[in-house]
Length: 170
Image (tube, rainbow, N blue to C red; front, side, top):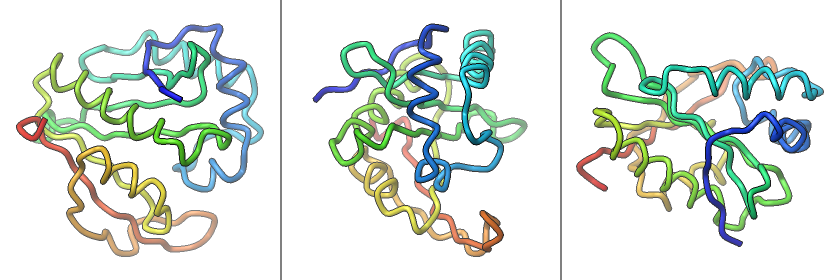
């Protein structure tokens, strides 16, 4: 199964809802996503991504046969970090462990490095999310260290890991 990234379409909202209305996925994302995730939430997110500044936010659907099965984005930081961007992604549970997310991460890194002045893309998965850490490692990211007691998720203080990929490493 080969996944591809592409720009969002408003018609992807239904598929996005199917992917994100899953507690297992939400447990590994930052807070702020509504649960259950509704069609209205999906359309609002996709609309926001389509109207975002394309030099600051690089947002795509992860697709199989043009059907949206997940979301991936790179978000430029500010001030002295304005050539650094944070990566975030999620994929429907039915597609876990198939290499699709790794390929999507490689594709978005290539896209961003080829089309912008960004020199560093980083990700901060929860330390307990070993699958996400493996995705990053397989996509060429370097482990930089553990951010101890870096977040509070579901009332628990948790560690996060820092990974990065540099433009010169492409």
